[in-house]
Image 1 (cartoon, rainbow, N blue to C red):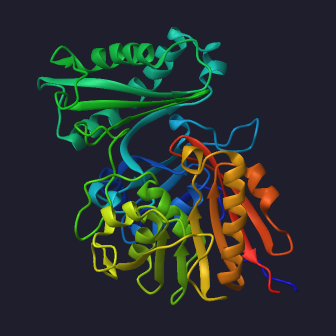
Image 2 (image 1 turned 180 degrees about the horizontal axis):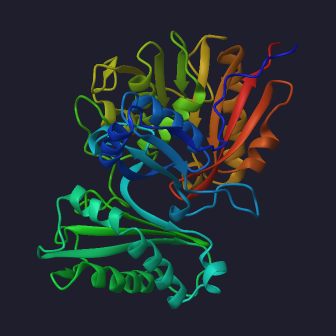
Length: 422
C-alpha cells in the first residue's frame, strides 16, 4: 500500500524576515522600538520554534528571526550540552511578557552579541582569545548594551551588583568558573565603579549570561536575575497548582505537539504521560482535539491530578485533558481508535537495564500499532537510536524521519512513524 508522507515540520533552519512597513520615517521610529532577544529552544527543532514564534507575534512590527546555533560539522546533528541548546535571535517590538507566553520557547534573554569561530580568529582558545572575543561583543555593540540596561530598568550611574554565568560545552583549556571571572573583569570595566560583583542569588540586579559552545560565544542579559533559570523547578499549569516540578520541560512538550501537526477532532494519546506535560501542552495548543494521558505509576497521577479518578483535568485557560492509570503494554483502548501518539520513552534507572528497556519498547510499539488507525502517526522520543531501530518492525511501521535533538543538554532522537495498514 502506498502512503503519502504525513505533515511533519522540518528541522531545517532558514532565517525569516518580516520587515517593518510604512514610510521611511515610520520605519525608523518602529525600529527604535524593536528589541533584540535571544531565545533558547530545543536544538534541532529551530524551524518549528520559529514558525510558532512568528504565528504568536502576528501584528507586531519588525519581526526578524535568525538562527544562532548550528549543527555540528562532524556529525551533522545538534551538539550536546546545555550550551548547545537551540538559539534564535529575534528582533521584534513585542514585549517580554508576550514572548514568555510562547510555550515552545524555553527561555528569553536580551541579546548582547555573538562572536563566531573564536579559535580561528584569535589563534586558539586561551584567556586572551576569550577576553578579546568578549570585548568585541561588549564594545562593538554598546547600543545593545545600553538598550539592555534600559530594558532592565538599570543605569551605569546607579549603584548595583552583577554576576556572570557561563554555560560551556566542548574542549577548552580553562574551567567555566575561570571563564566567568575573566568575563566578569571585562563587564566590571564597562559598568564602572558603581557596580560590584555578587554571586549570591537574590543580591545582584544584573546577570550576564555567556554561552560558550566549542568555537562560538553568545552573550545576553537574564531578565529575571533572581531566578535560578538553570535549575528552576518548572510547574504544571493546572487550575490547582502542583507543588512538584517535572522532568520533561514544558517547552519540549510544546515542541513535540507542534511537530505532530495535530488536526481538529483528532484523538491524541501519551501512553507514558508521567506528570502530563505533553497532554497539557497539547490541550493548551489545540482545544479542538482530545488529549489522553496515562501512566502505570499511581503516585504520579495522584500527586499531580488528585483525585486521579476525577475527569477531566482542568488546565489554566479552560483547556482540559483526560488521565488514567494504565499499563502501556496493555492499553485499555479499542483497536484503531487513536489518531496520534506522542510519547517520551523512559530511560536510565527508571527502566532498569537495556534488556528490560527493549522488552518494554517492543511491547509498547505493539500496543501503539494495535490502537492506532491505519495511516496515522506516532512521535516517539528516545535516547537510543540504535536500540529503537532494532525493535522497529518495518512490516508494521513506516519510518519517515529520525530527528536528532538536544533536549536539556541531552542528545535524543525523535522518531516520526506512520502505521502501515494491514
